[in-house]
Length: 461
Image (cartoon, rainbow, N blue to C red; front, side, top):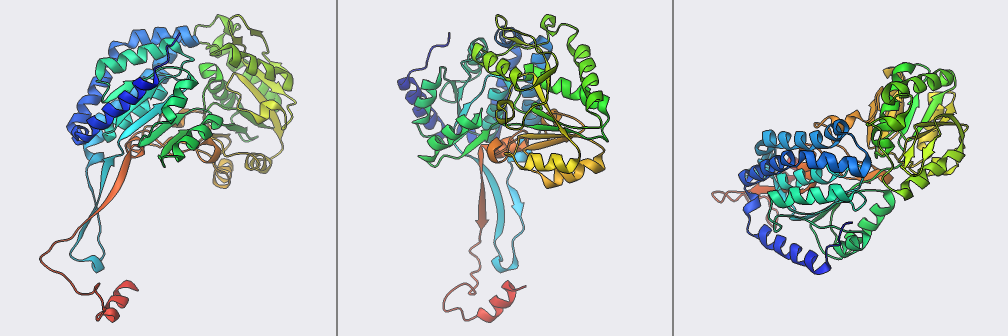
């Protein structure tokens, strides 16, 4: 069990962090680089404890834990160690002739005290990856791990406390009562990863203090398989993306829009792909993740009745196990098509054209991800005519692995973005600075505007 951090402790940490930030130590880029190195060393020191905890909480294998959690955070740290001095340096901007002899630049300054709240599905990656951006920007940070993965939460607290004093980076623990206590305090930025429902709670709380927010939410990410697709490859990649972390991934393919001409072939290819990934009995595979809680299990298992099971369908409530499942004859208005699934069940809806897929997607909230399996020429119009947080053509999930591209949602799937340089900017204010010398003082701008004719010609060019 996780013990709730007291309200008094939370207030004390916030006060200490504001005092520390006011000391200006974090403005020094070399200080930030040293802090990132300490974080990297702490992660490596506790790597075995982390992977053991991920297995206890989620049945996540060492291999999957390293690939989807640890390596991503270490890669983000290494990217900043290499590029931060350049990214954080002032950026010179051109200055129009009308402002002669001034010089213009944009400086990147830390917002201040950050609150980072992580979900349970990737409990290490989604807590520490934003922290990398906060440290790189020069912020202090309060971290709130998910109580639904208690073993991971305890290891994360040890990692943080071994690398930092709590007046710089601190961890608080507990349930939603702790969240409520946290939201009553003032921060300079809140970074939240979770559901759209909870995102609204965060945004309402932030509004009281006009606190900026980054909301990494979820939603129903569609995957479209056109008749022009490589069906076998599509089935293989969708099966991987849908069963990674037991389907408990915010950018997992949530539902399938499948062209009628390739539907039956896809079903067979999907069946074979699942066997290659997890064997004849996925329950026996060390790589097949379980539902995080009884409540999550019951919710996802309940979707089985929303269609006809073509593949899978077996469950074991004692182990919170749900077999990879493909559903057919699913109504667009059924619960499984209204709610984010967050599990290994994939509902299929038959389409007759890409135009039909486009209309279906546009009729719903903007998703966090859109996946299209088709010839690129066929896919481009769907990319152009729709909106989503991110998109892959002939792949799933892998756009998150490119540290040079931003990750974030749009509309109901979130706001703000991070990864790489975008993480720096997420926790920073981009401040415009105009430097004007005193050796000359041109009269154009002053009343009574005797030189207005010249000024008008200059401004009208």
